[in-house]
Image (cartoon, rainbow over all chains, first blue to last red; front, side, top):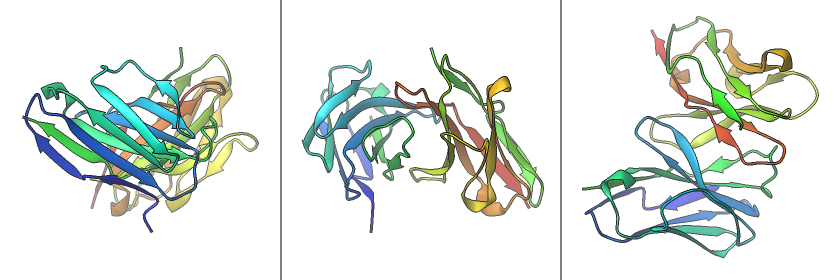
Length: 114
Length: 112
């Protein structure tokens, strides 16, 4: 059983388009995250939600908008895609967001903007 | 501000040799400490973590790490490298009141 799943796995699109990435976890966790991993493997948190409430909102362009319809899902919508948005985007979850908790990562969505 | 440094962006070891991946952190309060591994084209998975108690922590796949407060270090070791250990390794710190911060990663290659 997949604990944290993301769709799509690969996404190739043109500059200026709008796209969404979906994430679902079946671990019963209350907290979910979005991370961006750049070409040098550097991993940076973008957002976190706890029980559908926004907790962390890092300095990312407002073209990125997360949406959590329920605590098992956290989607990421990106408007007006730019070349610099090309990266791997990871969804993760943890029990309730405590600092000592393990985060469980999805397989990633590889976004390429042309 | 908290930060994590990993000495050596690329480390190569021979199969059967000792693996040592270095991690140092800066934090104004004692943090929680993690090592995650990322195999090619996969997400990260936890190797081990230090929260409280014994400073030598054992993880999966024969890895262990020791928290040394005086050195602000949390180095990862494995006595004998296996080909399947080739991956990207991330040290992470989580100050007790803030989000997890990941280090820049160390790519481990294992030479047959």
